[in-house]
Length: 79
Image (cartoon, rainbow, N blue to C red; front, side, top):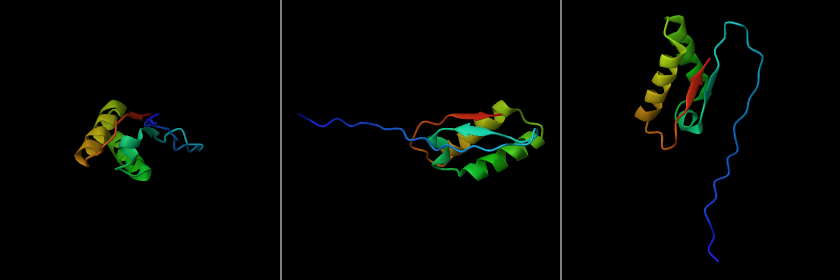
């Protein structure tokens, strides 16, 4: 028989305790393949501190990932 291509998802998982005023960026590898996690958090912190919404901040990160030619699906949630 023929071999089938199989995608096996092995997630990057990290946990930490955050102060109440900290930011959380959850995203797919389409984001983190082209923008390091620490950079995403730094960008999100700055945007939220400037009064931008979590939704517009997530959209900005998606736009940045597309601009950096991400070749995977891009999902982002900022909390």
